[in-house]
Image 1 (tube, one colour):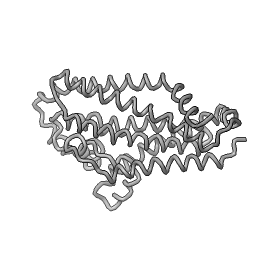
Image 2: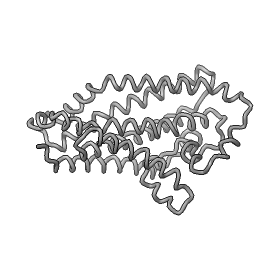
Image 3: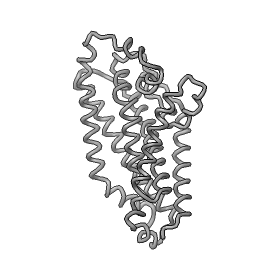
Image 4: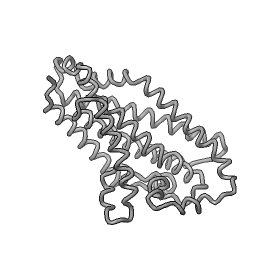
Length: 267
C-alpha cells in the first residue's frame, strides 16, 4: 500500500460529505446572486453605510472593496471575503482534523501501518486525498457563480474569476494542512478539529483587529492575509508573494505533520 492507495481510499470515504458541502455552497451562491438585483435597486447607499463600520470589521468583512454595489464588489463581500475565507476555510481545516486522529481514535492506524507503508507516506496520502476534494468544491462554486450571473443577465470577467478560484484553492489547501498538523499532533479527533478551526477563526480575526495598529505584524500568522479576493476579482491583481507564502506554508505544515506522526507512540 502506497500513499496513492491511502488517498484513493480516503477520498472514497468522503464522497458523501463532498456532495453535501457542494450542495450547500451551490445553494449559498444561488441565494447570494439572486439577491443582487434587489440589492442594486434598493436605493440605499451601502458604501457609505459600510464605511461607517469600525476599521476591524471593515478589514474582516469588506477587505479592499470600495464599491459594494457592483457585482464583483458585492460577490467579494458577500461570498468570498466571509464565506470562502472564513467558513469554507474553517470547514476544510476542521474536516482535515480527523484525517490522522480519526485513525488513531478508531485504532485502525496500527492495522494500516503494519502494511508496507511508512508513516510519512500515510500522512502524505491523507493530504493527497484532500486535493481533489478541494478542487471539486472549488470547481462547483466557480460554475455556480458563472451560471448564477448569467441567469440574472450580469457578467464577470472570467479570467479574474479564475484567479480568485486558483488562489482560493491554494488557500483552502493551506487550511487543510493546518488541520492535518493538528490531526497528527492531537490524539483525539475533537481536540484536533477544535484546534484547527480555532486556528483559522482566531488568526482571521487577529489579522482584522490588528489592522493599522502597533500589533499589525501579528496578522501575518493568518493565512487570510495572503489572499485578497477584492484585488483578484475587481482589479485582476495577484499577490505572488502571498501565493508563495500559501504554497510554502502548506508544504511546511504537511512536512511537520508527517514528522510529528513519525514520532508518535500509538500504543
